[in-house]
Image 1 (spheres, rainbow, N blue to C red):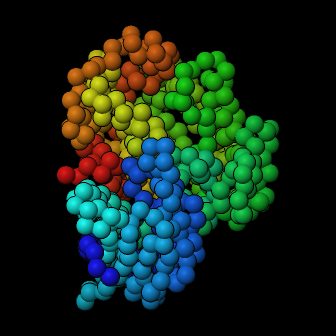
Image 2 (image 1 turned 180 degrees about the vertical axis):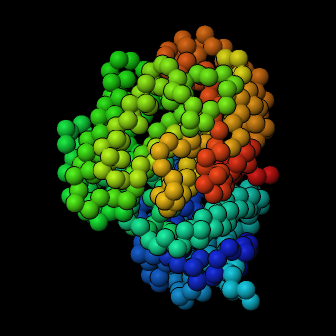
Image 3 (image 1 turned 120 degrees about the horizontal axis):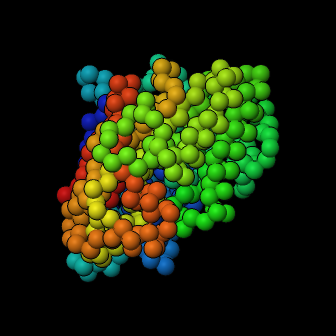
Length: 459
């Protein structure tokens, strides 16, 4: 075929057969798309068997570029290929090969043969840049593949689960669902609108919830709630934030409590806002709640799960820190100013930001589902909280940008009002000891490791 060749191999923590099954299951494609790329899956195809077609849409500024690939060369447990039929390359053929060693463990071998459009001129002008992007992409893919397979292998003895998820299209839900399905679990999405086949419709504003369509579900993950960082707070938005968490959670839990066969576990999102502004005090699950709007909201949010707990359902309230992803949330909002060299600390910079990467946020939920000994409040944060100034300097270092333009506290309050004090200027130094003691292995335990992985800046 001619052209350029890229090859990379990965020693796997499981057998070649198990790794091949992971690639065949729904969600594998979503798990392998780097989060820094603006790529949407338009058509998932029917696995990796011959003739299955995958359609992606990549955004480059205002432009949208289709990429269609067809699978072929399928040999169960051993290999498959995908060939570009439409897209940015003149030629793209990717061989996925799975080999076994004498210990029964597998090796994944990726081999891509590609040609850029424009012949030798295209290769001369864009060859180095494209090669670098391919290397970054496969480094991310292999890291994710290894970590996912290692995580699922820890829970093999528990078998597959049927999991219902609210907020499945949100930041955490869209990462969690493919993590679950590639592990052999089945997922039912609870949606408010635009239901697809297999979805269950629910109304968070209703006064009751008929849970009968969820009969037989093993676990429920409740992630839905009004985005607290989307816009400046006012009385109307704060009421929506409360209703979408406290009221909707209570109604759901009352519905689960009435089921003849109830779910074994409910994992409900919560937040470290429970602790309020506490300076440099180290905060554990046993710490008292703080004061302020968010602390009161989170306290009532967790209390809304009481009907499920009283009905004998194991309830886990995951108190998430700042969830890091370049797709949405705090990190996504910070990227542009930092890339433009106008980023810097917020306020004094001494306030603690307890954070967790998006992959660990989803991994912690999986862990909470599968580990029967976990219940009650759990701090879902990385084991290394940092101050805002440490966060700022680390992000600047990873992006190779200066961080010399601070945002004074008064400017943050002027721009964001109450939200500035509750989200940006409040200090929460939160301990992850309970998670570590329960056996959870963090994928990205330190901030620099997390940012390099999420932004593809490993070098």
